[in-house]
Image (cartoon, rainbow, N blue to C red; front, side):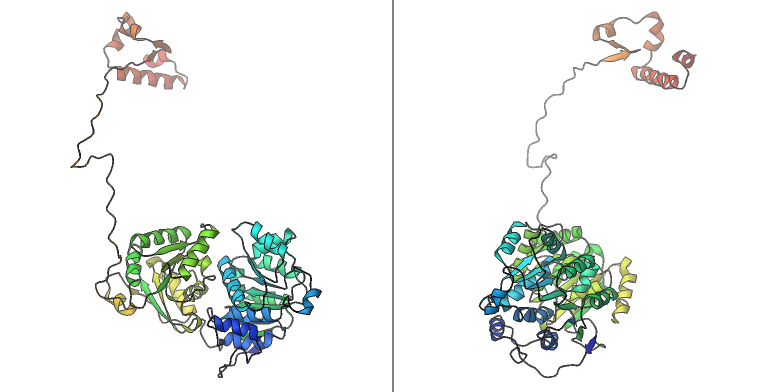
Length: 497
């Protein structure tokens, strides 16, 4: 594997890197004019069809680093060579670990290919098969999808990837964490050996390196930063607070009213916790929505669309969505719970400070998670070994995050409690109750024989005078004891004696 870790000091443009004018014009209309470091270092190699491994911090533009070569090396329908290709079969395949990331990648490709006329299809689970099957039947040029749905479509013989010229594995380390590596290897075996393979990831675990050695041909290893740089985005300010769980919603409500707070993503550990926090923030008057695996795919896409279009300020998500959210203008990321490890921490706070912008990351650490945070702090070489104990009224919270003095954790008054129906109100007359009927008819049994009301009114026999003088309850209790004693071998006669 080759290595390229030099810093590029000169600023170039996409046109100077050999990108097609049609792609450059489409990117300029989208406000993208200057390539990032990973794009500048990758394009010159990827456009030649060389296998490569791209490693860069999250949020530094890896999508176009492989997207532009995939588009430029694909044959458009106006090219005479298009007639020699298998008609309707995809020319390139891009594999992403999550649905949200697949949608984000396909959106960037659709933007860059507006003037080329290439057909981009996104396939993922959680939605019906029919629209995806119809699109594949009509023909596509580039397919972006998650491993599970891609394999399902291949098994149905609806997707043929045996002719692709390029295969991209985006966020390969996340696929490893989610257990998709066997599925990825199946997809690799379905593609031709002469393909171009590009692998992009923020970290390089040993399993990913082994995958690259097995399925890639002399790949070029490209790092967009020096090996001495941290994996974190330097433009993100980090604040670590030791907070009480019951006080966290109040703290978040005050952070949302900070001077520079715009879009905010809150990360939780569980789906149920994400739903609870989102409901709590909505009750406090903030436009918040959850995003977790128990939601239908249509609801997840609707929530992300509202978040992108500034119709909703707060997104409460689980870690599954951490890799797939690429939204401009996220000012704050709040870790409602301490991340599991340093990789999760990197990917969570990587949702802010993207594409050269600044961001703020706030992490709440419970008392039980202090040891876990110390391990994360040591692994990333951060200066927050002892988080400061902070509450919603602490002065350091207002000072650190620019919260105006006197800010409360809600912007609407709490709803009044609903009156209880079973307890009459003071200004309301009590409900009239129907008179209780004292007439009762009971059916009793004596020695297994049913006694009617007539027989019950008859005078007791001489042998029953002893029991007649006792209360009814005592007599019944003694009979029950006799029956229980009879089960152990002693009859009623022996018990009475």
